[in-house]
Image 1 (cartoon, rainbow, N blue to C red):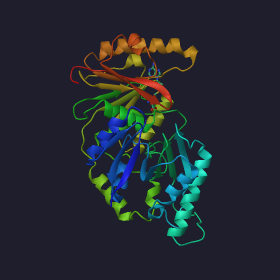
Image 2: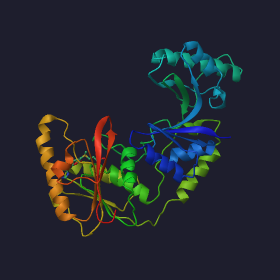
Image 3: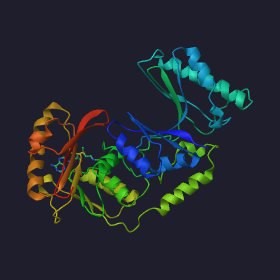
Image 4: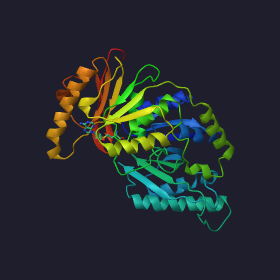
Length: 376
Ligand SMILES: C[S@@+](CC[C@H](N)C(=O)[O-])C[C@H]1O[C@@H](n2cnc3c(N)ncnc32)[C@H](O)[C@@H]1O
């Protein structure tokens, strides 16, 4: 039996996510804004959760229909087979509601109508009078756009950016899914190119690169809410986890280095690197002006400070000018990939990018500037 699975992502990463899904062997892959849909069975729910690096969450589409009245929303929701997924004792919060350009715009009304409809269907299907909602969680998502309703269940639980390697959260790091996306967008080949991040902070880009280089599934060391669902045989989870362990390239050769001028960020980076199981990823304390490499070619992928307060801007402008000088002088043949919110970065950096693309980093509009070196 197959279902439609929905992998969500942030704007700008849909094509990368589709590439990841195809690489896992799925064929009927459809790309939309912020999401990619594909077909899969129970085992594929486990596989998608464990493997997809740029997906925010994996949903199972339960139904899709037009509705412009609450009666229609109720009737069409009741007609869906919720009991296939939600057990008699399971929780099913209707937590996530979005509505755009639709007659049904009141989120709280849609929420309570869908809840009521699901309760009605589950009581009938499970032949019971009450639903205690004490066991596994099956969070329901409602998306309405142009009067088309999509109802789905979240199989991930907490967002897939939570890989389980983050020891400390007090310094705002790059989101893991975004960092993985930046690496994948750059089409970095670990066996060929050294990778360096001179503003590595807590090491997110380095760790995501390391996981890619060793083919470590990003979700291997965390749990998912669908692991507790009775409809998915736990043997599927065991199989997919073992498969992921077997696919780790234990002897992978790669060179990943990071530096930063903040000792505290670096000590967190070291803890995160250790938790991620990547002893070959190295970081050191360096000012931008001090960085160097003995390799003639390589790749810098980095997320320098943006400076959101007005008074910080002159310093940031000077830093970006310094980046231009340092990269040109010390890494003349390397490729550079820089994520920043600065619209005029190229001017300060002193070079026009070969490509740039818009990317949102936690709601901040950014640009991913890509400067190709000799080998790209
Ligand atoms: C946006 S943060 C990078 C966050 C990182 N990607 C992460 O996931 O934690 C920018 C980093 O640049 C570092 N930094 C700022 N100015 C620097 C300089 N002149 N030389 C080296 N590092 C610098 C800061 O300490 C900070 O950790």
